[in-house]
Length: 308
Ligand code: FAD
Image (cartoon, rainbow, N blue to C red; front, side, top):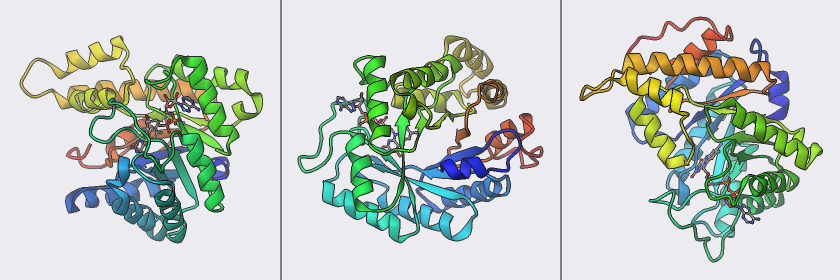
C-alpha cells in the first residue's frame, strides 16, 4: 500500500476506496459498477470490510478475489479478530493468501449485534488488534495496516492511551493506518502530532484519512451511532436544515451540503500533506467521483443522477 501510494499517478494526491461485501445480486452489480469507475479513475487501492465474527467471511473473500482477478485495483482485505479462535484466524489469513491477497487490515472488531456492547474475547482467540498484526506476520508474508481514531477510540481511557495503542500496533509491524471517518480536520492533525511525539519512527508511517461524503442524513446518523464518532455541530445543523421537516429528507439538498463539506475537508487535507484520501463509498461511485472532480483529481462525472 505504501509503495502503491508512492507510485500513484492520480493528480494532486492518491485516493482509495472502501467497499463492503454486497448481500444480494443488485447490490453486487452496483459494487462492480463502482469498482470499474474507481479502477478507471486510478484508485490506489480498495479495502473490503469483514463482518464481525466472520458473518461476511465468504462474501469478503469472493469480493477481494474478484478485485484481484478483474481489476487493476490493489485490494486490502479487512480481518477482525472478534468471535474467532486464533486457529480460525490463521486459516482465514492463509485463505486470503491463496486468493492472491497480500494486504490485510488487522482489526479487533466490535461485539456482533451491539457494536457498543460489552467486549469479550473468544477464550481461544485474541484480545487486541496488535496481537492480530503479529499473528498475520507469523502466518505469512503480508503487508499489514491497522485502524486509527482521530477522536480517540470510544473505549480508550484517554487520548494518550489511544496513541499508545496505535503506536503499539505500528511497532508490531503495521506499515500504515487508516482512520475512522471524521469531519473535523483538527482531530486528524492532532492524531498525527500525537503519534509523531510518541514515536517519531512510527509517526513517519502514513495515517490515511477515512472520509465519507454525506449523501443522506439518516445514513450518516446511523454510521455515527455505530462508530462512536461525532458530526460537528455546524455540519449537523446545515444537514438538518437541508434535510427539511418533511417525512422524507431532501436528499438532493443534503447531498449538496455533504459534497461541498467533503470537498473542503479534502482540500485542507491535501494542503496539510495527507498521504492519500480514503473514501467510504457504501459501494456507490457518484458522490466520491464528484468530490474528486471538484478537487480536479478526476474528470467531471456524467453518471446518471439516480446513483449516489
Ligand atoms: P484495538 O486496536 O485492539 O483497540 C480496541 C480497544 O482496545 C481500544 O479501546 C483500545 O484503546 C483498547 N486496547 C488496545 N490495546 C490495548 C492494550 N494493550 N491494553 C489495553 N487496552 C487496549 N469493524 C468490523 O467489524 N469490520 C471491518 O471491516 C472494520 N473495518 C474498519 C476499518 C477502519 C479504517 C476502522 C477505523 C474501523 C473498522 N472497523 C471494522 C471497526 C473496528 O473493528 C472497531 O472500531 C473496534 O472497536 C476497534 O478495532 P481496533 O482494530 O482499533 O482494535
